[in-house]
Amino acid sequence: MKFHKKTLATSVAATMLAVGSVPAAFADIELGEGLSVTGFVDMSYQYIDDDAEESTTKSFGIDQVEVDFLYTGANGISARVDVEYASGGEFAEDRTFIEQAYITKQINDQFSVKAGRFLSYSGWETEEPTGLYQYSPTGYAPYFYGYYQQGVSAYYDGGVVDFMVSVVNSAVAPGEYDTTTLATEFGVAIQPVEGLSAKLFYISDDDNDLINFWTSYEVSNFTFAFEYNQADYANDDEGDGFLLMANYAVGDFGITLRYHDYSIEDAAGNTLEENTGITISPSYALGDNLLLVAEYRIDEFGDDDRNTFALELLYSF
Image 1 (spheres, helix red, strand yellow):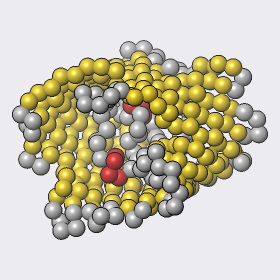
Image 2 (image 1 turned 180 degrees about the vertical axis):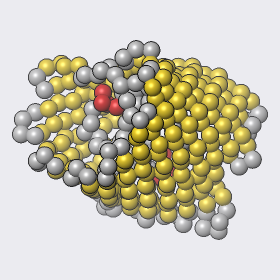
Image 3 (image 1 turned 45 degrees about the horizontal axis):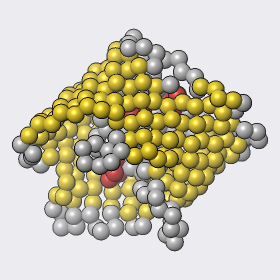
């Protein structure tokens, strides 16, 4: 199944196995009238050879478990609550928390409004592993994407052209409750012909200005994507980055190639952080709900190199 990030009212079940292997039959587990549950279990093994640390590390464990509760009521009103367990890794504690919780009112066939805690619409690469075409994201999302937010959002589905706008406490800090200074996110999406999509987002948050643009094209068994990001930060730092991705999927097999590059500079033009990476990631569907993903990734951080090999097992329900 090939996935595009459109609206967060979409069930997680509709985005499963987005790594580009095979379409699979998914249905929410019905708990009662209007109430259903869906989710996933994500585990992985990693081997990392890092020149900067002059060492290698090996790790295995549960990365993430998520259970999403969806309720569809009367008069176009629905609700969603996502509960997530996330592994803290080597240096942090494991956490179980409410990832999303929002109520949606469908005004008509085209227009809807939601309020609560929800994920930004921005960014080609999704926050969840079920929405990625490979094992790992680029890693530049904290610099260029919006994150989980608390506030109100409206979505207009015009068929060929969609519009979305959010007014939130903070575009990047889901724990922010102060409404003295609000953040805004604007987005427009076009689907001019079958298989072609393009989206442009502008985020303004306390003198931080982010622009995210991505486009994708699906043809035959291929998906191609390009993303560009630009940011001006409140402390006068600047950032830009991009990615190129190609995915091929046939039968139970899929493979993704990705190249990304980004840098963050201060007002004087000094490089604060830079990264260039090449990723190759084959995948194979072991069953309707079980996906095996392998990945080899080469990263350059300035003069330091990092080589990563990973195996991921992703079970969805």
